[in-house]
Amino acid sequence: MDAQLKTDLRNSMYDGAFANAFATLTGGVFLTGFALYLGMNEFWIGLLAAMPFLVTVFQLPTAYVIERRGGRKQIAYRAAAGARLTWIPILLVALSPISPVSTKWMLIVMLFFVSQTFIAVSYVSWLSWTSGLVPDEMRGRFFGTRNMLAGAAGLVVMFVFGHLLDYVKHRPHGGLSLGFGITFMVAVFFGMYSLRFLRRITERSVTGKVIPTRFPTHVSLPFKNTNFRKFLAFTLVWNFSVYVASPFFTLYFLRDLKLSYGFVASLGMLSAFGDLLGMRIWGRVSDRVKNKVVIRIASCVAALLPGIWVLVRPGSVLMPILLHIVGAGFWAGINLCMNNLLLRIAPQENRSVYLSMYHMVGGLSAAIAPIAAGLAIKSFLSSGIHVLWWHLSSVPVIFVISTILRFSSLPVLKYVQEPEEISVGELVRILRSVRGLNMANGFSHLLHPFIAIVRNKRTLPPHRG
Image (cartoon, rainbow, N blue to C red; front, side):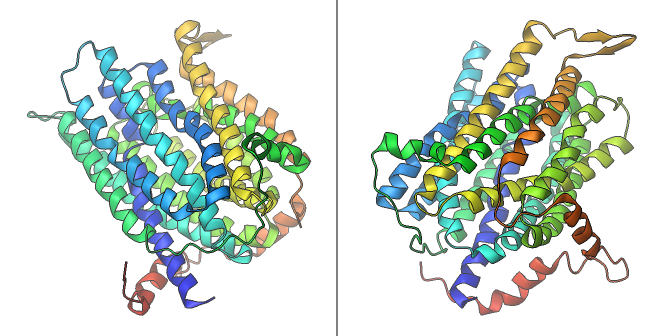
């Protein structure tokens, strides 16, 4: 590996850490808690959750511009800056005395839509840029390590600012208004600071030949590739089954299970820790066994999770902890390997349009799901249902539906072909050979990326940008 590539990969890891700190503080428990603070109901929360996926339609024209004109780095940089700065007017609107309150909600949703549009444009540019930067033989290790470091940053800010919101919740002189104000302004700072590292990464020339086509022909390319079309079909059904429930977990924790912001933030930390372990392990495993078989195994566990959450009762501590750690470990494998599988089966020629079509199809499915669930809760599930002697409230009903849909979508994956894929049995054999946690040696091998970055910091060339 040449020195410039090492520097680029290290800067990408720093960028990922600060960018994920921004994403953590403007999503998940903080976004849902903010929506509840503003008085939003399930429909509005579902609408907010749908925004990041609705905007994936903008990735197609972005991909077309990239293929025709280039400039991936410039587009990724400027769009990322726009996404993060948009949170300043979001905060100003939220804290302004706008009446009626529905007008305030609509303005916030519209600004959130703008921010997510910038993120969608930035992401497809960044992914096309980075996929050409990282060699195929080390892609699993790199993204596993990068995601692990990003998860560690998210873990820290989730803990600190989750407890900050708990601290200010019952305080005079601002309370949650002050807490969310501080949280989102710090998020903007982290997001803008990550761009300092992003701009240092070089943009290498595209290795695949770009086929010049008109836009309609360009858009149709992924559907003419049989294997990629099957992958899109799996993405469509899997994302719907996941996101029909996903946005309502935090609502379930805060409202139904009566958990505090601090405890939910602590659960998020445990989830991030499970993600750290998972990224480290699955990153190594995927380089040896590829990706499809990992997705098959991990998705079976992920499919069970919503149904198990139905069994959790208010006041329970152990079950939420176990579910967050185990779930995060397996979701790390799914997220990492779905991305790697995408890059392996998408052709080099006109790759950007394949990447953007994948995110658009999956995004639209994920956008429709929470809106449909929110409408279902509002229309005919508001009082829940009775199953024999057991009463399920509205959100647990959605969780059960999600589990059924997740298992129903898994057979679609077997029709997708990955180069050099292996069987489930061979994966089990290889997993047995993966080094476990040696408590006598501590966690040094898991912390190796952190240690390596600190040791190599002195060798970085001076920044001239």
